[in-house]
Length: 487
Image (tube, rainbow, N blue to C red; front, side, top):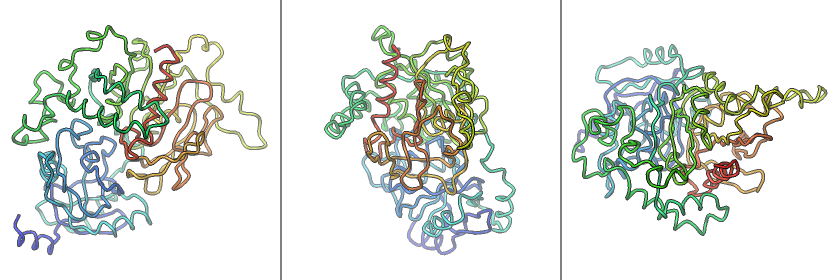
């Protein structure tokens, strides 16, 4: 697009974002020339737009980026967090042409080939302020070629069912179990040890070495030179046709046949961690694979199937939408914990909650699996629901990589990455759960642990490394629980 065409498009601003409350924000279409419904949210991160676009947790959302310039470092296969793009739309202020040696594709093309529409030259400051004041909104993004009356778009946004009560985990999960490759290098092992250390600053260099070592051993489909042109419908590293022996819905780097099993290399010395995929990100799997054999399971996998494998630990992943819409997952978590739902916290003048919060029926205590469990984001909320707590919607959610979270035990403040519209309701916590972390922006619960069982969870994304290593010890805590349990 030459300067004259760019000027004319920005003058006309034929595209727009229409909110359910009647507000309309105009912009210029980019990416796929399609219209899309979704929930409008804003993300305060200054970078990481490709990670956002490929994060399954954003399924059903139209994401407005508050940073002024987007697209200047392009996109590449290395930075993808999943097998494709899951967000409903992307809204930016200024869309820049890429100028970076790692870039293999402009952001515009990444979205276009994945069928995701976007808007640029939109007043994202005004949109962000509106969403802060009025809350996240059901929205209609118009980027299609046919003219449309904004009032019709507002009507469609109001009629959309939204994300409340919707099971989006079933839409983004894998369709069959698969093994994620174990990181066998010494550098990766040092990275795992780094994650356990509270004195993580002195280990920054080894962490960088670990990431470089892993990148060097990545699946060949990640190599930009292997993909001189962009696939017709998606990023080449996502293209299943490039990997005929691999399942269509899986990222090629997850292909077990491309990586000799851990058992073959080291005699099965590493513990097995079963990961429930509600929309899992690749870097979560990499973080776990630094010290464990990782097997990923679809969201609806029965707990009995997991228990039959006798894993050393179970991980509950991140994911999109409403946690209360996943009763089958909540029931599976209870089976993994060997519990019945804990009762709600009683009133101050009511009876003691000890009897109500009995975690395990006496008859089942000796048969309980006692498997260490860690949850992140949606997994955190699901663990709380399984124990008897409740979740509720936040006004405009937490979306960004600069959220301060306080570790109550140490008093340390961590800079965290977050993406969620729902949170655990503090007043609903049963006595069997203890709050471990708090959000310093609004006081919401950011971490929980079970008082008697080896289970804990965090609302933030430690694998996103915004600190960059503030939250890394959380994976080390899970590893320590697995070791303590004999894994």
